[in-house]
Length: 582
Image 1 (cartoon, rainbow, N blue to C red):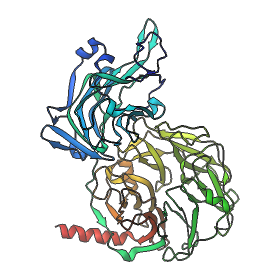
Image 2 (cartoon, rainbow, N blue to C red; image 1 turned 135 degrees about the vertical axis):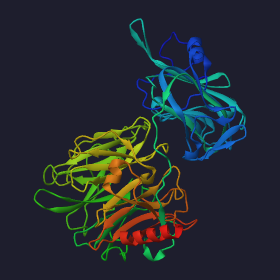
Image 3 (cartoon, one colour; image 1 turned 120 degrees about the horizontal axis):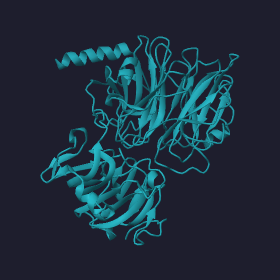
Image 4 (cartoon, rainbow, N blue to C red; image 1 turned 60 degrees about the vertical axis):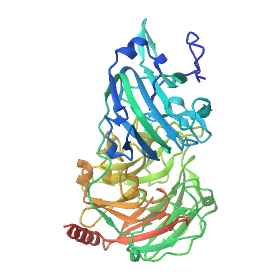
């Protein structure tokens, strides 16, 4: 059975065609000879990625895929394998002979850019998802098309858009299994789109994989692993201070703010994974001890997203603390007395977003001017939003010391990387702002963008070294000018993947794309990668205070911990580690 929504009555009635005006991203393509003209299929050059069971143009050493006799095998979330060629300007057909063990409900897929053809989702159906398809489309039970664990021949056939008789003819992408068309859709140009395989919860085996027709070299990615040393503080429990723990209750995603006295720290976090009532605590001694939970306004119980704290000062010098809570609409609470009392949460406009505000940057254009950054994937930017699978980073501005905020402006996106959770760092001379970005498709390293005009224009997103790859980057300058940046480790190849880590290096390392000095594992997270949206603060004496949540005890709900350290202590540990190695 072929799924197609046809808008051209002259097309074959057996195929259902979905029309897409613009393709923002794509999915892996399987071989569908019928969707290509015979001439295009036969004339094109064949390039193999797996041939006679052996990988030929795949860098398996950057993934967890393994070469076996007669096939390659990969499994696990975040373990995509991407072809070394991308879609070209003309017609092509991608052919894959594969099978999936542990297939049931696995969400295993073939992808082109950010679009997926799924072999079997949670509902046990074949599905398509991504910007090209508008939403997740459940097709038919997978077992109606092929048997679980069977070897199958999968194709993705692409006919490029063209001109015919003075009019534009849209492109078409057709997926097939075992010589039967399964799904077809009209497309814009797919030229330059990467494609690959995602095993997800299955164990995927691939015996043959090739592209016939037009293709081009894929944009080279940076290495997926890093070479700088990693220091391990997990055993140094004397550094760890318990902020809050409640048996059986998920406590997560804290943000912190240091007051001007250099010792008072405010901390907010949700009772739940992002969504949940906001808990509020205070430390009066630089994070050595923490208060009981403090009273909060009633509306804080309705928070839908990670709360974030920020200091703002208006043009007259009046200081305030603002706290954002995201999704739709983004809301904000205000304190006029350094956190002693707070307003209710009130919306800042008719827009929403995720992890709002990831960062707030004081602009040097005029006193009281700020920009705040957040991201969205189409669901929350408006009240009627829908997921697009294309991530956009937005900026909103304030000219009155953070009391009111403008409509959002898009500042960054990428056709294959899912850029989100911006974390801003200003250069030592103050002239440049760098924003480090989480990459949520899990096929790339993290990214960075730069602005040299206070956020009015931004550079093209650039991939960062693996050493800086993670989620929710938050950093401070140490007294010696080095940067300490903490994040959740989502590096594609890392011995500390899923743990709470930090990176130590310089501004120049970020600008020049260098790995930095060393990494630090702060705590061992015992459940996946569910940890480490850290607050990072610098005390006047040079002590770094970083606070976050995680599954610190096996089988226990996550809770909040603070770690205190100085870079001199880490340098001594690095020197000792280097001496022991030699």
